[in-house]
Image 1 (cartoon, rainbow, N blue to C red):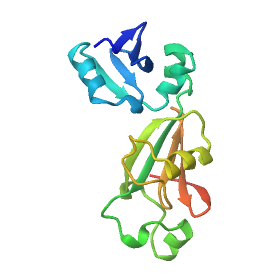
Image 2 (spheres, rainbow, N blue to C red; image 1 turned 120 degrees about the vertical axis):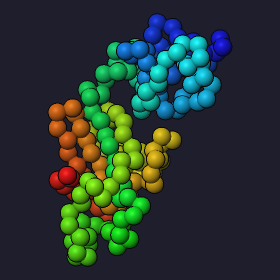
Image 3 (cartoon, one colour; image 1 turned 90 degrees about the vertical axis):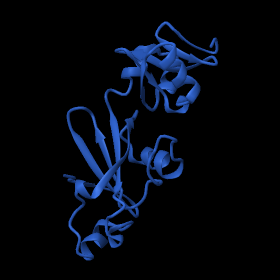
Length: 174
């Protein structure tokens, strides 16, 4: 397939930088998670694939592989949503209302991970814009809502934020 190829460590898809080679695999932007590319990578190149948000943006800005893999400084985001079997009265309520209804602070075992990826900044407003208004294709849950938990991690420490009716509240999440 001459419309899909690897040149200088970058996967090109119809002229667009879709991903890059890294430690024997291809790191691919989710917008290029397509059967045609997967077939090419498994059949022709015999390469595993890791999907990572933001790769296309960084590659198309001209920074090359170095910036595509490291530009965000290791900043990662995880989004948790209540499990399907959680009590209905626990869903979509503020921390204060949750307490009033007799529930403890949010516990990790009540939640399921619905998204994990890289972010350029740790700005909660950006998270709301990206996951509350325009949900990415690789997001496995519903749009970001009250009672969801957002985790920011820099590789050394994590901070957790509960989505409130007006903004976010930092919480402990174990």
